[in-house]
Length: 354
Image (cartoon, rainbow, N blue to C red; front, side, top):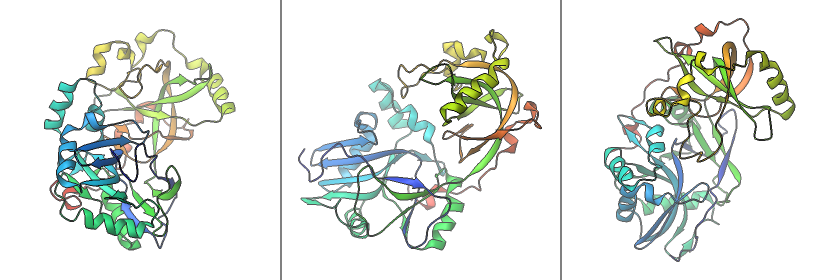
């Protein structure tokens, strides 16, 4: 492979802002795997945000990109799985599997798509140093004839339309809106874009915590919500505390620590078979590898309010932000019913043929 831009590429990033800023280029914020595609004739590589190759996990996408992309190019975009009118991030996670046979099966069952939103190189030309307006025009021309599952990310400079997108697209599993300055070059690893995401709160049951890597202080709080059957489901974590606060939390939660896990709602996490049907807090994953995911069980008596952006199935998609304790709330009242349901939106209107 010999391209004007060579792997690995550290993708350009976005910083969070509370509102959509005016006078910029706007796109949907895709909820998938960020990927930079390098194609040099018969050679094609999918590079992840961390620089690790994703190529082996998406054989069907490699074939499609070989068919639909220009002969020599470097594109930045997102790998997504879309069907039934929405994105499915959980199915993307399943694709990171060591068994080639499993990858092939999933590639047939839930094929992936690639949504391109930036151009770093085309033919013999490097585009990364050019302003976004020029990169976008060249990208649109290069993908003018592309067919599904390869898409050009819809974009606009109309602020009012971007606001409509922000309110509508969440119903299809998208993650908000990204705003980009039209006059800036592609700056690897720099947070020169802006992301605007939905902000909501939920009252959750605190059922345990993981210790911080530095020692016996709180690393992350393990959160639960009760389902319709009265079972406490693990829905995510809250983290990002200052060290002093981590020590305070460890002391504060000491009286709730359980020495016998058998009485805990998540006692089954220790049984390997339980992880086949539920995402429990002690589960290993292909993303965490051998990382220590042991945790400290707590009597589920405390309620805390957390901020979150959106759900992926029955869990918070990202780490939540701790807001406050809720001594006025009973744990049994912390159910899924309190969560706001976004208005449905058919992703097929945004990605025809997905």
